[in-house]
Length: 601
Image (cartoon, rainbow, N blue to C red):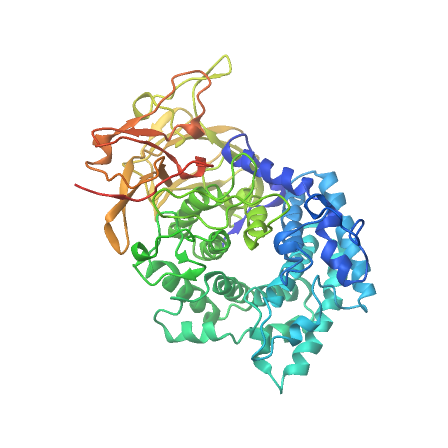
């Protein structure tokens, strides 16, 4: 099993992903810690500053939407904020952000004390009593899971003893609650959207080895979805997508901790029914109105509520578990597609705000959230998503180095043979620090022309393994230290095994092309996909399309010194009744767009 290189061992380099991460970090820093804590304060009997009399709610220093004190899901966002902030602090020297984390954790400890020493929720304990049959309450376990997750990440990544002490006391509350319901209503633990709880209890057991977490694992592991997965067949259609995906994370973590084949089979069965046998939109989404679309019928479910962002983030996490376990490139290919057409496409490139859904109807528009008045669930997963790019690139088993994603970055790791530094960046010719055009792709700059710089201090042979993307249009071109070589490809990876020197250079070019992808359940509809990037037509209707991509697309190329590689996947259609512009879906902000077009060929 391979492991991701994380934390301060990876640094993102200038480019698209670094910019999006910076947008997200700025947003995390912009949010006031007191507002993030407002619902925890209220539950503990502390009146937030200015929170008792609010003459002007629109301008009050409070968070609204799903964080409003009247919302049953209030407080969920703080846990996501803690997880995202801890990830950033784990990856670099960010003292101001770390100070805010410490302040928030200390304040949560104060709230826990005021609540009697165990409970540290942003919602009342009695919400758990409402989860009896016949009562309605909006997902109290979901809300509490986020707080537990955030504190766990602060402890795991930053070593906060206060965070783990809070969790230790809160776990006592959960143990008592489970025991109180063992005879009267043992199924209560599976209500209130509890899908993430198994994973976090497993995490805490792995971190502490305390028996109380084993007890909670046993209480939460008997979910009905697992029973259905054991039986086989389609277990997900019309089920709530985001309430089921975190169960795959729990199965994955249990597989890692116990090694029990049962959990591995459940994780693989989940992926089979969620992806392999279901199909998806070209963007990787497979839900409508938050529910799983039945297999291969996506054409019947195009609407304004496709691809909830939480599902994209959580499916990437499930894929990453499988990737580390198997090293199968199909999971890395999926992650790549989801990142370009979910992580990036559902984050506003100017403000950093998320969109809850990614509509697939012709003439759709993305609906962006506001900074303090919405706080849908997708706010939380978005702030986390934009912190994990560094952790999806470089992997190692201690012997070799595997490159899963092609994001400009550099990593440092210790292999059996000594310390190794590896760096990747888009490779373009430079003259007086101005960008010129690469010789590949007919003179166009290509983001898939990549240079790796390798520095190895130790002696001994090890392999640099480069994923060959599923979308490649031809053979990869590889050179080592300026000399082109015949690439050795094994199981979808270029394998470069050698005694690496103090500094060596590997250049790789992956040829790409624009191609059509048909829509499951409506095969007359096609979308344009450029490498892993879904293109959107800037048009408010399905104008139809006639011809093959190579015949009807004219690249829109700006031959200037300032041309930037990440904005080069832009085209104009030609030979159509009415021509239009195609841009990466992740570049669409406020324009009307259309992803699928009726093919007339």
